[in-house]
Image (cartoon, rainbow, N blue to C red; front, side, top):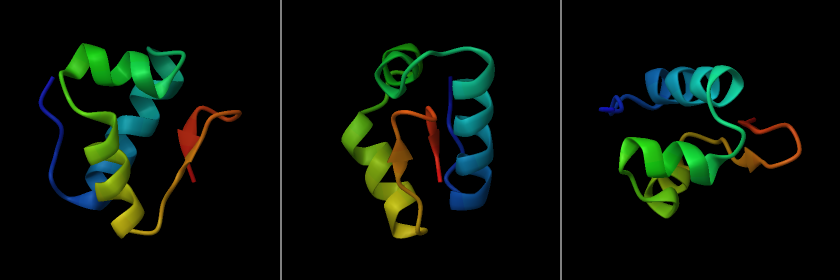
Length: 58
């Protein structure tokens, strides 16, 4: 799965996939072939961080 570069679109896609398809960020990263740290870094730069309990970026 190719993830968008735009932070707002990335947030939307990632949170939707986490809600609908994956029970954790690690599971999503394995499926899309991306590095968790890089994904978290991109979204942190836009002001979002992963909430494990909610399984979404907030």
